[in-house]
Amino acid sequence: MKIIDIRESTRPIKSNIRNAYIDFSKMTLSLVAVVTDVVRNGKPVIGYGFNSNGRYGQGALMRERFIPRLLEAEPASLLEDDGSNLDPHKIWATMMSNEKPGGHGERSVAVGTIDMAVWDAVAKIADKPLYQLLAERYGNGTANRKVFVYAAGGYYWPGQGIAGLEREMRSYLDRGYSVVKKKIGGASLAEDCQRIEAVLKLLGPGQKLAVDANGRFDLKTAVSYAKALSQYELFWYEEAGDPLDYALQAELAPHYAGSMATGENLFSMQDARNLIRYGGMRPDRDWLQFDCALSYGLVEYLRTLDMLKENGWSPSRCIPHGGHQMSLMIAAGLGLGGNESYPDLFQPYGGFPDGVKVDNGYVTLPELPGIGFEGKADLYQEMQQLAG
Image 1 (tube, rainbow, N blue to C red):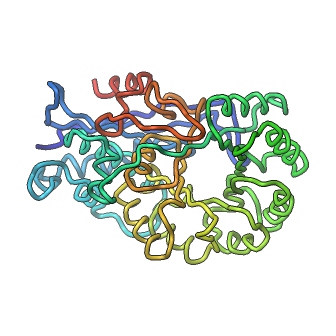
Image 2: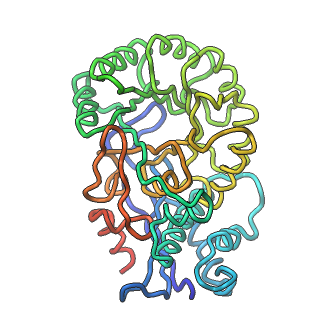
Image 3: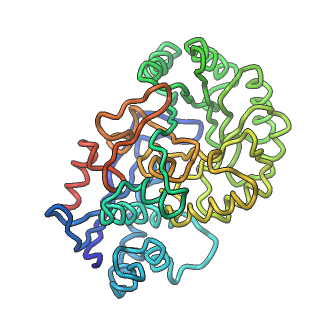
């Protein structure tokens, strides 16, 4: 058993939208295929992975460092001790050989993308959905296939206006979502409040709105928004300041009694630990958004979950960023609180397998081997092109 090839391609996910910090007119991602010599149902097992939106494709790093290390390694060194499957932890260690600690930069995205493809292959070799494999290896043995998801959108579109925002949010609610999210910080506070109030008027019983500043604010502005947002019953107030400014997050907490969320731009267990130590996050109400595809993959995410447990945090307070099926697998297998979802944006990489519907804010995952990419026709077509 061995990896015989690793293929990478940079793909566009551009869109004419912006948040408070960036526009997505030139956004890309990396799509990866890990080809093995294992045959299941008459076909070679191929694992697939891609990185989340908001970070660009990482092909150069993969081609120069991480892919060659795996292909040059002794095949047996990448297997479980009994040789029955690939070992994601050994593969991760091989990718990270000769890498200095700290200074994570975007190598975490390159490694996390390959790591996703490896886990897809591992679960396929085991002929199990990844959520079941994770529940058996690292959870309580039983996966919860019913996972909470929220609809992320509400970006600033040219000429969108309040009416366009209302149409977008109403479409998410009509599709079964109970929580929707919109951007703030890309307009004035007064205009953002108008947009918030327009969405709140659409919500029925049990439905909530979350808002996301994408790290735009300094402390003074973050506090001003916190005071204004306190008049609304929001699901959360997300990433007010720079993701590495733990002091800002800690100083903001006393000004906002509701739930806050952050963590999508922290790319290692060590950075996540610093947030928990110094960021003033409250385990009874706040949410953590670490995204395995951007932060060295599931191998590192398991370390992060261990760290959270040591510090009194439940995995149910984690709702990852990214809107991809990998985090859905982790949520179902390891008891996370849910996952982000992009119903319309960044396709075909977002969303769920074909036929999966949102019901009162939850999806029920099908029993597909691996991550289940093969169940999403438009996405799998892209993957087949890469795999040849």
